[in-house]
Length: 167
Length: 258
Image (cartoon, rainbow over the protein chains, first blue to last red):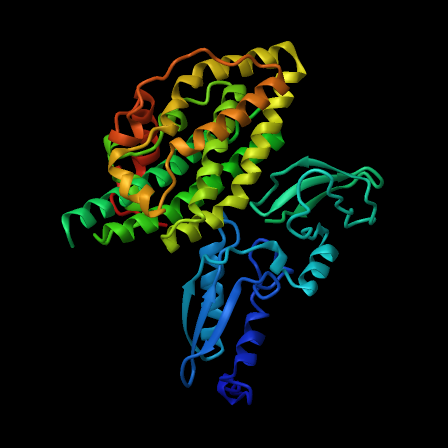
């Protein structure tokens, strides 16, 4: 049986369709989040029949996944029938505040505490345990298994957990 | 272009390379702790600090390559220049020593580098300002991490206090260089493209003095060491050894890529 050409999708060629494809591209380090949840795609422009121009912004400067993420985005759109041109934009710099509500919910369910709003970081911030919800938690290290995460422990349920850092 | 405009462009290239080199060389130094740090969390912290710095170096090198206009890549600038072409400050190339000395070096440099980067955010050069803005919030973590461990080691035990004090003595002479204005950069200071290094000195001195007092560490009486790393590429012997290890692969197998 022949598979339907992606171009037969009625929405093909619209910005909405491009965003829909992007929602299916996971972050390689935290696969429950899509590149859209993370706020990595800053703009989508339909530049012609099946041509798309994207602006992508890196998260942490030291994130080794940055080039992989751009490649995954380009591949997904090519598979959907588009030709893609991506440009990297640094300004304004990416902030964890751009993570969607949907993204925060998925992150918490995955067992990672979502980032606090920026400006509340530093001394005095409370990070709730993603396992039991207790706010009786303690910072173990501001640096964790990836550039975007810090290590915490919960004093209530005694589980260690990761916190998505705010920048 | 007039001679003056050419000189200004050349000075900007050297300045951007200097910021890139500071980030890369300190990143390489910190990465030397990988697998050797005193505790698992610190080992992980060191590799994250190194990743940040090397990622930031890459952004600055890419911009330097663009200013240079010779079609070079960030990797070419990092791996194929010799020691006397590096424009980093002498402080960042100093050996790790023990963990106390590493923390002192990171704190002394970050207090300067964060202030410098915050001022660069206001640069009239929009690309330079965008890179600096990208790095500032990451560097805040570096400053907080190193200040926390400075206090913890200095206030924890006599041994920790001695090591922080020794680290300070070993490194203090290399801090003066960070505040030297460079005559060739004068047009850049006047145009608001980059901050005058001397402008950062008073704030740095006050912040460092506060931490020393809080941590029970005596100020060092050491005088300035030679200060021509950033200005002229006159480095301490340590840089050559670091580059030999860091550049080995590209030198032995030119053009090798992942």
